[in-house]
Length: 140
Image (cartoon, rainbow, N blue to C red; front, side, top):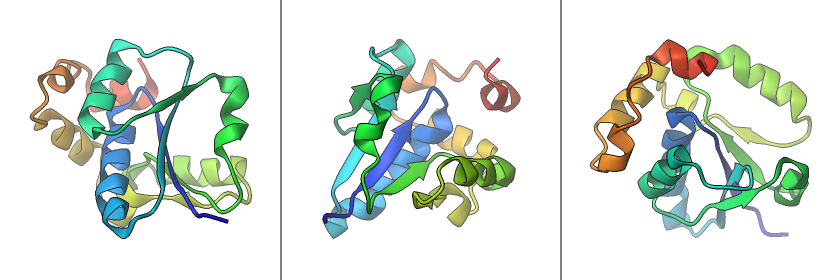
């Protein structure tokens, strides 16, 4: 069984930072990486995230996410250190699936992630920084 790193990309810049970090850490080790976004179409937000992380992304409908949860996978979920309660809830929901908290492991907060995102050299990414950290966190 080949162990994979599966990065879950959402409409939150924190997930893009987590995916980019996982790629930079694991690509030199030759770990197979899969970046998955849930949804059947690429929105402008996802297009900018895909551009930022720089690797192909698999778009899958909600009903097919089971295809990307194979035994032995390590799942990267973008949860910063200041949202550890959310990570704990995700661990409960994904029982048995190893989740990687690479942002928390590096003590990155949501504000740190938004700063990294805003300093991106990708102009498509900078256009999405109109929301505050609180708005991103609660999806408003």
